[in-house]
Length: 167
Image (tube, rainbow, N blue to C red; front, side, top):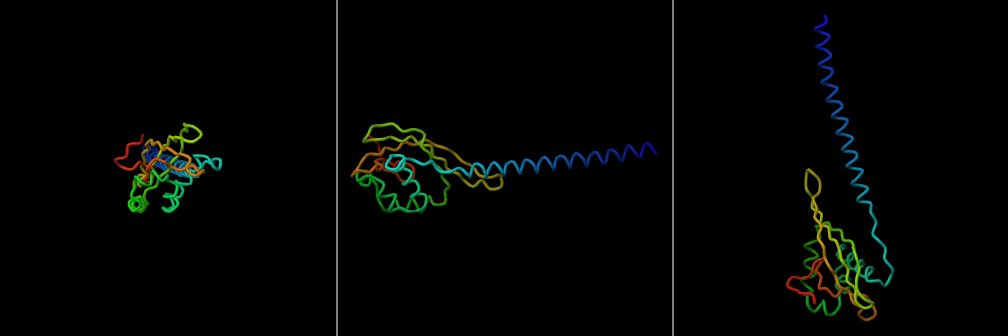
């Protein structure tokens, strides 16, 4: 009878290990889901009206929502002369499926010229294992034009236009 008791304990012990493993897996999934909600719940920074940061933020919001008229108007005349408006609009349609976040790391410059150092994160749907992303740096120059801060770097989205060498 002792032999049967030992065999029963071994079978029950195997089930306990599976049960503990399942509980740990469920806890990990819940923690990962909570972390995603916390990260995605971040709010946009608010900048003082009339600042270079607020001007860039307005451009970024317009670009992200597909409002190419407002995004185009945020560029200086000089920047617009170095871009094709039709290609600017086409790139917005093409990039519309990409999830992107952009934030301002630093501002340098003078009272009439500001340089914003940015981080631009592109997020791709990674399928079964979640999303994948990469972050790159960018630099955008803004100048006062007609009393308003406008982007002087020829931008298409958050990248400088190909072939343009900012001076």
